[in-house]
Image (cartoon, rainbow, N blue to C red):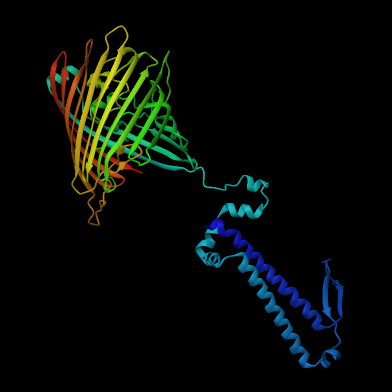
Length: 520
């Protein structure tokens, strides 16, 4: 509004000055006529002064006898004429202003808040100094709000304790308790133009310090495909993989997550159906890509992935829904190898990437020589107010070089309930759930206590097939989440992993973990 009203304010400002100038001219002209015909101008310089500049004196020399002889009624007539002319000038000025500025604009201009806002606008000041469009001040001044910059981030501090039996210790070694920062993210995002977005997301707690997480450019309202994204980002495969690490119900994604391509460098197209109950996302990417978005290797190194979702039911603004989905990925690794690892359920690097310490893996296939691989995924999720259920089943089909074809299955199912009545918001464009936002944020001085949620999850993965003996894992986990407010939560999780090692047999362990998360 302030940019719209400013030109009218300028016109009113200059019209007022024009009015005053006209009034002064008329008054001066009439005073001269009234005073008399003789005007003398003389220059005078001081006789004794160091100042060489002189002074100019204007005096009116009238015929005093004639002025005294002028009838008094002529004075009154002349004054009435002057007042009439002034009234006419005021009337003409008011007519011009009414035709130029609407009354509503005058109301806006009379507001001190709007006037102050206008005076503080740097682009307006530049426009006054350079009214022509080709002037440098106008060419290089900022005429709109782009590009925009929005900073955000979050950090997660994890504490974990592990107890193991002898079988587990022999199979995977001693998993010591640990405390540390799981994620420390700093994110910058915004718009380059109205339909062009960007994001730069860095993690200062991962390997590389820092490492890239999401670094991408996004184009919206693209014909046919709706949205286009390119850069380093999460590939469209799996509901839990597409969910941000700060939105998870449990501390970590399930063991089935290891069978995903996750973050790679590529280009994707995504959008929604007309009724906003379906979504799609397809991507072509380089594989494998390291934590800096670099893909290196010999032949191949290309892959693609796709995911579609559909809401069979959507009611009460997403508090009641049924979600189904499916995904597929095909790839030709650049290094002609692929490896699947499962790591502990706390304070670990992103699954799917080779850990620096191989003993940190609970089950692992080791490097598999392959030409191509295929991934399949099925999704089922539902919500009914504070209750939420989510499950996925996936398979990895590997064409082993010089060996038999391999198939590795994995699955998980989880459910949770929010005792304070809130529900998980559902994102219809991405086909995922977001975290709970408390209706009554926690406050020491008020009655707010935040939101409390409890959940349970079963997860399974089998990395044994034919000549590959990587082991299998079953686990049961329980979670208690306390959402203090929109930007903070505490999580308390207990996991009971059951390891089936081909060499040492079945082993049991217990993992206790606590996470505190703060967003900014």
